[in-house]
Length: 348
Ligand SMILES: [Zn+2]
Image 1 (tube, protein in one colour):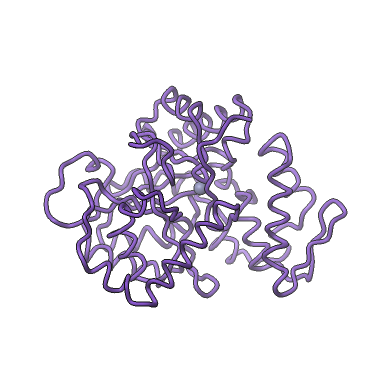
Image 2: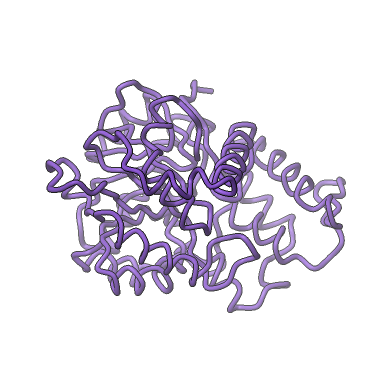
């Protein structure tokens, strides 16, 4: 296996590194409660002129308590628009025009809720954004592996799920650790990610058996080709690559890693009619061979989570994940995220 620069899980994923992210979120949450962040985001930070790149994932209409939903997302965009300068990727290299911190909004994975829920809100506030789209879930009945696991955790009505002779209790406190254990087993299956998807589709309960079409549409389904095309046609928005199946690229063979990047780019270009030049590493997982492949396939920039290189170049742009519904936390991350990142504090 190639050496990975770093691994960072999406919203639902929880690795040791993402536990440190969780810890940081908890810390930021505690800071906010103490009032420091409440005041902190109102004080100008000594950030350099580089824009702050925020990373969102799904934007469902409804979410379990404490997670981003339509109304909390709308409040955040209104808040960001009011206090910061929202920029497009094409403004990225431009000099700052005023004193406001510049913010680039990015959305990973290409969930349908980005099109149906986030897009109208962004349009209302004239907020530019970039969407990194995995193509697997553009097909009906196909889901990204972590969306499946999150749905299992959030919606599966049975007290347990079994997989290859092991039982995973979903009762009370056992629910989250069980899903975590199942996830870790799925991620060890080889070849990655094919064996993992075969196991999900052939050996685990089908989402359609225990979720309503509305729930699936709101929280699991991906954008179809027509929606990707509509997004790409809008001058406010940019579509970028995010692989076909959202694997950990460091767990793929070289051939599979390249196929994941190349086929997704081709699909997006067919769907959108645009050349795709921006790429986000799924789960922030990349190495030098992934960067080389991205350059070779014609991507001009790569978006990471935590950049490995210091200083990070245009193929290792760092981003700050937004996992909180709190406006104070978002404001704090925009103001101080670059400072904390420069100090190598993991933030998601
Ligand atoms: Zn992703």
